[in-house]
Image (cartoon, rainbow, N blue to C red):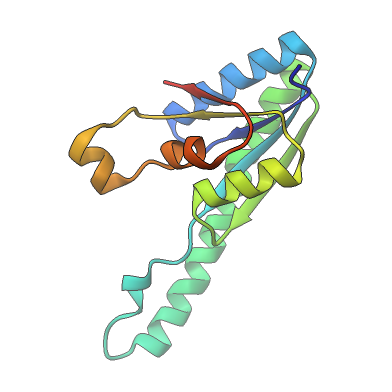
Length: 149
């Protein structure tokens, strides 16, 4: 049924639960896995100030370098877990996109049958203020999504 899982992670403790659950599922059904982590675009509010053209350029470069470094750490950890579980895994770091958008696009491009991701399950004002990438993926995907809490 599920032959290729897309497991989304941001490297958080909660996302690690989603990774572990996805790997357990993949092991049980013999599915391949693609891990994805996403670096959001450089915050637009950082471009303000009198020296914006000069300072923001340096800040952007540092932001991108740190995002790549963090993405590699997150994905290397996922790969080690997949190797230990005997699961075939690809690693993808998507830069400068919103997570939900990147997850939706990659799940289609990689022809995944299932998306596995964690969610805090926020409601009300917390959901409104912080947004919900999981809710957006659920709203727009054409394939099943397994949400881990």
